[in-house]
Length: 315
Length: 195
Image (cartoon, rainbow over all chains, first blue to last red; front, top):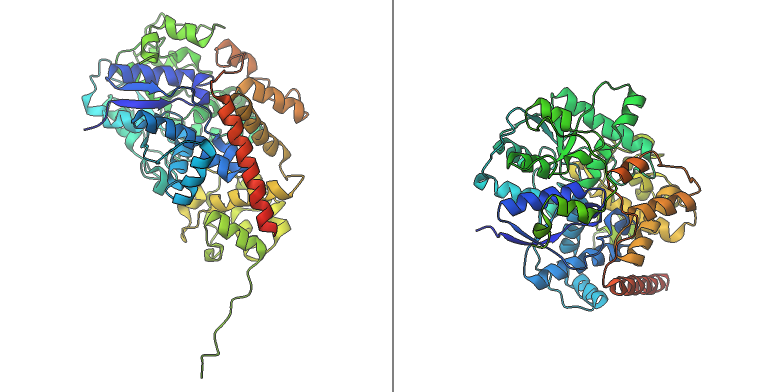
């Protein structure tokens, strides 16, 4: 039996630049009867910066969250691929008793490293047969992009094949979509470099998008907020630099699942992307004609209330 | 008569010892096939490819390895580690070199990247989570490129993707004390290594 109750670690970006990922994940899980209980007072996992600077910190910061989930007695569901990777790494390192003792001393808590860490993609994948699809994505050709952190290294994250993963493809196919065969599923998009090396992100992300386009995709599906930002927000610059003629919408897999399960594009915050997927979705008959991109400066909580999932947030 | 013809390996360098003990990887297993450099998405901007870094460690070329831009430009995507025929986790080797360079070198080869990571951690220490607007602002000010990355700012704000105020988390004290303890522990460790 799969559990239907998870501790939930959103991570910093899901409360800011990737809030559409958070909102769509909560909506979809709510519909499927999966309960996500957000960890109270969670803090940052340390991301790429902790393990660049200090080994101990890179293990201890995620361990704090692992410990909180252990106290709740629940498996820990994670949406961000970077957080997922760091939490998995920490749990892996803490199999070493000496390191576990050290971390317990640092945290001042008793932690036994029993928390199971799962990525939301895997949670929805395992749930795919139970889904009632009310709006099949049958007109949509999707390039599923997994990125690097979700699948590597296999012995630690153990999600899928490192070079040609399939679970997102199978999930999308279950929702009625056609997925394209392509070679850039796990190529790196530039990850945390957009501030420091924007020209690298441009080059790497452009390669990925052109390959997806060439394979005939209408859009790219992602499971990582960094991948999303890099692939979505820089397409205007790419057009200028590489004289591209195309735009390719990039959607979270939870948004695509949400569409198939009957949520509206507005509920799924599909108007938040830099490269709007709305014209494409309208063409494919997956969005009503009336929806337009609407900008607003209101705070996150208000938006969540507006789309009627305040109760979802609080489980 | 005892066996006298045993070949003794030449003494391994400090650098190799450090990397092997901290990364858990056997550097001498690298036979320079170059698969890591071929698959590396960042090798086109590096001053030495991952293969050359591996060779530098084998040869004990400490300065060359620690002063290279490579160790900072490595994105940790782990393509090299996944493809190495000798199962060396090269990304982990890069990581251990970064730790050493950060501790020893006052001027990292990629100052901006080092600054970014440092600020990222400072923000975690201060408020428990990373506030992206503060990160961008501090990075621009302290890195002395005040107008970098401004292009997407209006779009981010208009989409409500950046909150103006930093997040508030209960238990920040816990995080601060964690940082302090880690720092003290690492200092202690370094002192012992020197002795």
